[in-house]
Image (cartoon, rainbow, N blue to C red; front, side, top):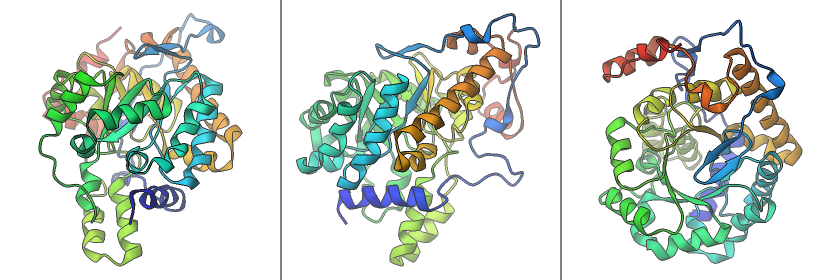
Length: 365
């Protein structure tokens, strides 16, 4: 199967099947956000109509702290989806990332499914996307092609070794990735975001990524789309019992998104992805260390209907964020990072055992 064929198969499975991380035995989301409580401010002393959601990320202003996270491209049938997503990003003044550009680097005829994003969003913050496993193969030339392809403001290098480990055609040679990332960070013409794709980033890897020169980290934690789950469905379709078994076992593998945000908080911006499902999740993410949040799976079905549906879904998220800000007494996004937060349950236990002081969030005033 070609890279292009896999791209459309992945997209369709995300629409047709339940590919999200499974909930815990207590019925809580795997992302950990159900363990996070923002302390209510009964005297906010602010005007909800005057809230400022604007942020700056990697030199570009966004009207809200949201990205349409890397999703698709690389097959002719994905062009319409990217068009709807990009149109929504432009309309709302938020950012957008494209799916892996590997297919288009291998076959220039597929570039149009990615170029449409810049065509439809001429003013938006747009970031490209290439896998860490392909860096040595494509080199700086290949990545500059990916940048030019969409007029990218930044380039994401994705780490998807969980998916690669289950995929029969996966690239499972992870040697030299950090050195390759460092080389790209030093030489590429745009800032680099290093992103996980559903298994999270721990503190020591976050430090290594920062030291390599990355401009931002996307934690891509456990809690949203399970790419082990997607590969499980693919294996089931082709009767591959070995991959099917391994995929099921690793469906919920990884660091929950909430914990990964705390783990990854260093000195560079953090993008929280992996199970962001509401504006309250956005507020919680920023309160524990994220700079902004990205969403992918909840926007797939709306994108198949049209730009209006994507805008409506994102507008709902933004309005939920406004309400959360108001009820915490936050005039700006920056102020969310200073609100009192109580961390409970599995997330507290996880972080406590990892050596993080969860009580410090509750001690804020």
